[in-house]
Length: 379
Image (tube, rainbow, N blue to C red; front, top):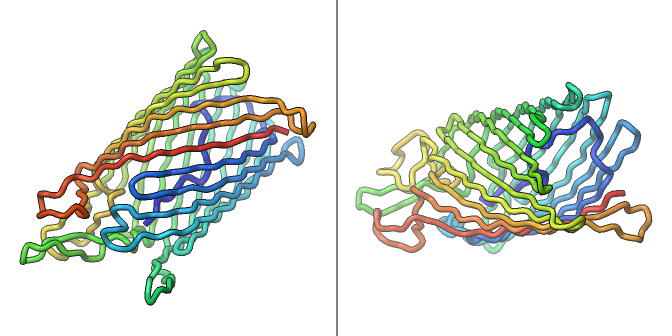
């Protein structure tokens, strides 16, 4: 199963707090590229936002992933593949006093997966705009398929549906003149077909040989996450930010994320940024790299996303502010480039492609690069 990439580029600094205002009228053109672990994901994204009245703003986004995969997961059970995922979304923001109401709809399609998502949120600015409280709800409906290859032809068999519900609550608080605090909590529930039809579990047969069988995962999953962000403005017009996130779910996964970033303007037009992020999770209770025998448990999975692993991400970025003289309706623009280097290492997922007896196969690890280039115009 291919990675589900983010639906939009995230470039905002953490823990931002501000008065209740509509988003700026702007257009963003993005090109993103992921390359690592035998997977390449790249494509464009276009976002356009425009206020139609003093209290109503509309936005539309179109996003494309062109995916090519020959990862260790794919090669162990199937052949390399190429496909394209296309996603479109519409959203609206309505401002009434100090309250902002937001709603939207997202639809994503690829040959063997269709996802439809609706969302709504309300945000209230209070205490002289020192505090902002937000609540949100997201509802998703997925249709899961499996591509079957026969005689050079590909056909899709739809194997199940999955429903998702997510609730979010957040608080953004100006603590001092230079210090901002953000606190977030979210809970999500999923039910239905929650596994990948392309994953298999491995077991040792009575002759000591490794064989595969279909994986089976629970059809319900509930997760909770809490996060804390701090942003401090330094006297030399720079900013330092840090964040921590804790996640736990009913599949037994406990995950920790720690990150920090530094933003430094070097002139009135140029801004540089560096960041570091560390993530670690333990394995799901029903995960195993190699089960002792066939049908050894009610639930079994060798999905590496459910394994115990850790990753380290180092990132750099630059932004250039410019004021074009033409066309006159464009007020300003920015050119932005970011590059992230990831190292992902698994503690209990082995690379069986290299061969060897059980217990003698090396653990799997890989490096990945994520590049994003986008240009924004305010009008």
